[in-house]
Image (cartoon, rainbow, N blue to C red; front, side, top):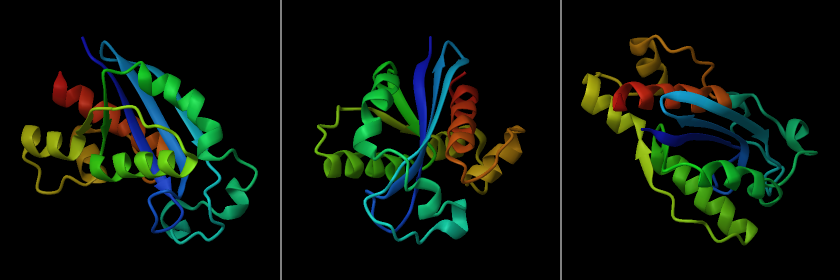
Length: 161
């Protein structure tokens, strides 16, 4: 019986606390139960990574801060036995930094990395998200947080199944 949440962040700048978008997909018993996507107002107006994800300050300036979103996001994460992310070290670092900035005590979430899962299970030459999705026939709109989270969830379901 699987019960996990896949999470993906997009960031505005080089600082880990600059989440500007989050996607979470909750999986239970090999079924996607819930999809969650929110834009986040980061702590700084400067956007360095617009060229990657297409988001600008204008897109997020009226969005809630991470701290304002945390109660609803936590509700979804707390229901999972573990979290998965493609390059889990990045997403776990963003989650930790955003919680620290907001003065939130971060619960102890167990992370599993779908990059590692893909390398182990399918021995792929490249374990980048688009390459793994191509190999498995998973639809992807790369650097859209919800699409990336759903792709990650589907990779984990196949790897763990």
